[in-house]
Length: 311
Image 1: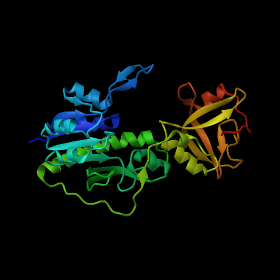
Image 2: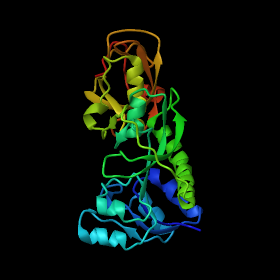
Image 3: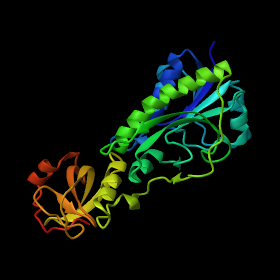
Image 4: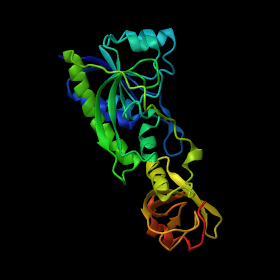
């Protein structure tokens, strides 16, 4: 047996789940994703989402409605006659008529241990907060923001040096496996759901540009968590003037080190910077307009000496 599935997703995070579902022999009757957006080298070409590209390779019909709130889009969705919809980072709110259309409902794969980190940026927020653990959960969707009952979960340890990119790649593989196991249980009629606890709710708001600036008045550990939580994108940054005007530098990899000093002060020739408590040593950076490079390579072309301030 197999299920008739509508798949709804947009970024690369969702692609392994789609391919695993197909690999299990389920029939994906439609794929919903965000419409192609300007991109490419000059931003002039319309670029299809990773899920869109994957669906085309497998010959799955692709739908890119701007909204699912109108009667026409809802009728089109219902006409697919799906058993279940699988939603992975789709990026659009599903109204009740859409949630109710599939016979077995809509299942969402969410990248956190709900109810912690409901919302748009659970992976980054978990690391930025210094969490020691994250995970993925299969949830039956309701009209709230990630508030539905949970069917299955898988936990993942956040190691001390793990970046958001590393956690993202881990969770998308673990999540794909979790979703196909959940679908197998759903098909057998054995997938049960439990309400989320009322205690421990936190929200993972979308990352804003303003909060990407590094605040060296915080502890070195907090700065480290901030850096790795935003690496590789959008990237935490600071600004330094080493005689060529103020230049912005993204910091992609760093480590807490021993020492102390005035917050923001460069302490040595190895890009060690003082924080409110302790110091942070930068290992990989990306100067404005250039690619990522080691701190050593960066220092070969930038005369950054002890005493210079990073802001």
